[in-house]
Image 1 (cartoon, rainbow over the protein chains, first blue to last red):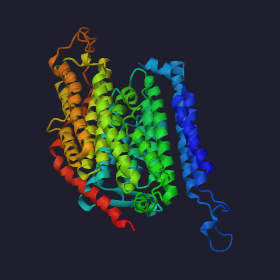
Image 2: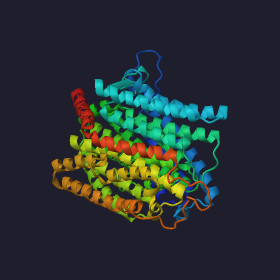
Image 3: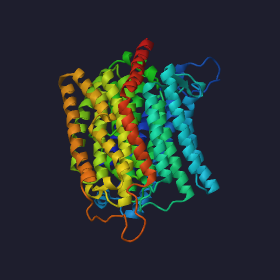
Length: 114
Length: 512
């Protein structure tokens, strides 16, 4: 239960950071915190006390109760890939923005846009 | 045909997105022909599916031969094939404009075959992502396609350079927050039911105890998709993104991007989560926020001076209207919402291609710059006028029929929500009249002032056309489609509705 509260807190922290921080790079870091929160949530979802990794062939019929659920973990492999590519694209955009406008401060950028 | 088309529809654009840039990098030559051929093939596949579903009923396709609920399924009914045709069709126009158009603002870097190939790949990737969202029957797969389409969209928006990069970054933040909220919600659903397949979820959810976890799941999914669908007050990313995008991108994104998310919202709230108590409450809230969005979007559109920004706010109003239909949830309301998706996609695509092109060729984006254009380019301006009349809701354009369906639905819904929806739709038409007539009056009845005109007659150069031909062709074609959709409204209604009803009936029949 604690780990779920932790994931929720991390997620809220990330969203708050994206909304409140003035610098675009900091917003991006807050976005990563938010994405990690979802990954923590999924990974802890699959955890079971006393269970092990689901590999067959250690003798006897496999019993589901002894295994952790591998599906959430595999889902998170995809989510991590998504997160990495989004971060990469975002960093590329930041380089462009910085070289064109000489600032990453959101308010100053918005003033320049108008 | 029914066995291969579903897979092809999603695989073609994704493969093309990888192959076109590769081809451009290897050959160092233009990739015009392969890219346009791919878009035509995708449209052909979508039309083939549309016809096949109309003739022989919905198609269920197990990806890789793994049947649901274990494997990922694609599902095509009247609803999804309609949106697929819409996406693939408008993508053809966007590809045409991207290929032949000026497309490039002065802020964008110089064009090379490789850069062009990459941007064509990004457009194909965007189309593939959107078609994947339309087709998939798996809620996690939907997240992946949502992110694929979003990443491609950020790239295309940012390709405008300068201010567009800032708009793209802010869009990326909003889009990723939306995706993460949705994924968090999917996690809750998976924890509650142990499945990710939509049909399986719909069958299992009624037996799940209605507790806080289910409510949280529904709310997270609804909020995530509402950000993507630009439901008021979660629309913050939309205006700058539409206004600063390069014209071919703006036309495509404004036409279909938010609508595909609204479609996903309709699938999940109207079909998968419909049996839950929280789902019903969220649908009610969606309706009221839709009403607020229709009114706020309309009022802010009136307040804008720049024409593209006015169109962007009018989109927020239109998304509100679609979500009013989704929120009311009756068969008639869903028809209205879908019809408005189609009508608005065609009309807004037309208007954004036109307004973007005129902004680029005449270096101005305000009403004064459009004064007297009707006399100089009667055909294109007549096409834009048809699209504007459809936005207002004048018969026989498509916009009239979507508002007609939604108004009838709000009367049958009744109660305060029905009255509010009715009033909001009428008000939106009045506001649209105000902001479009201002432009139309300048176009047709005013003579051009001595604005810095790019015609260049005095200098002896060739006069610059009001709208370059690569953009004029999509504009006129889309306006014709707006008229045709309006004229053939009845067959459309009969095509989509039975499938939607059988879709819900199928789920209740499969429930234990």
